[in-house]
Length: 520
Image 1 (cartoon, rainbow, N blue to C red):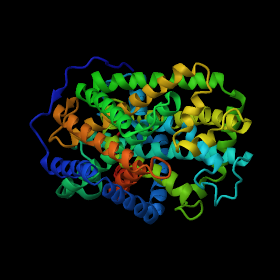
Image 2 (image 1 turned 90 degrees about the vertical axis):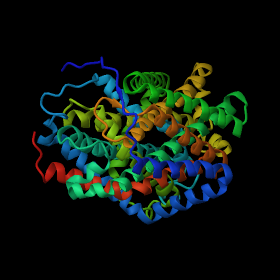
Image 3 (image 1 turned 90 degrees about the horizontal axis):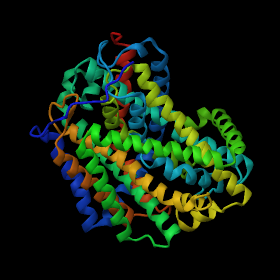
Image 4 (image 1 turned 60 degrees about the vertical axis):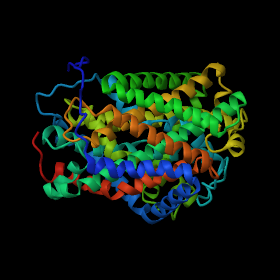
């Protein structure tokens, strides 16, 4: 199928401010940034209470809806509805498959796989924060290796990408095929009809706040990780000036890319980011313990499948808070925080593709990528820890939850090149996701957005600066036991804001495709 890479200059949606969404959202986000200046402790306490309360109270719902989303993704991919073309039978795609996949992958993964590709399996293996306490597994044992790999596969593949894909395919079908406005509210019309528009100010505002907090948490994790790398590799201690400098550089990068628009900014960053990801994967595979990676990945997959239902429906009680609340439910919260607005972005770039192609690019391939990444990076880290090549457990215990990556990289060939390359990649990775989301946030705050139209540049800049400010304050003043506690509080707070909206979106998608019988 032919694609068109050349596009006309995007229109600007400058004077159509959607005040009922913009002002409440900006007052809350701007107020949070201001609160971080005048009373950062209070901001941390509020976020912490939302984090603990929401995950302890609704862990069962997070787990249950994630299973439903996964089942939906499987069924829609293999059903006859997979042949429906987004935009109608004559719609032609705008982007090549490689560019489309690059934007879908890097727009959603942000800094996550780099941050935790080494750190997360090592934390499980060493039981650093008590993750194995209720599993009966001995830290450092062979079973702990299988568990570590399996748990990473579970947290970073088919479940979370099903959440993105469900929101994206629902939004794409309703926007392009049913000519509904490009809003989160529109995705609930199959359930409630036009009367849901009366609550559009509330629904879209909550979705915007959720993504803003989720984005701030991702930036915060990135600042912490790069800061720890600078300290370990170059001896510059982590400090407020270091974090502030990194925040300013990153903020300028993603707001500039967002300002340039989808084709000149976001697509360029995504293509660059994806190429670096591919290079890093191949490099680690070639110099790492290849046979160990293959065997451990296979054993990890088997271990996950063996415990599939227990892990998928554990509301905290079986695995314990250290494992389930601080890892899996935190992951689900941040993915759900992103999902409603990330779905709108995935919808926009999927014009002209079929639903089955959409699910391949946005669900299947990113999930496989996540497993391959953790298999290669995590497998190498686990083997090095077990063989005594480098004490990654000790590095994390001494320097925080994200410090293992740099000890890992320093033991690679060409580490003097790879360490700064990964630092730059982290900044680009976050910038790619952030420019996607600041653009989508600005779209939600603009009336009557059309396909191919860009929201006003001043909104992109305003949201980008506000989100960057909140991330900085949470890193600087709410590090906690793991060093990233504050940013985890933000993520869960964002997910809590849209959890019930996401549940309704799941039900709306089921009704749209399996009850209302859409036209092919």
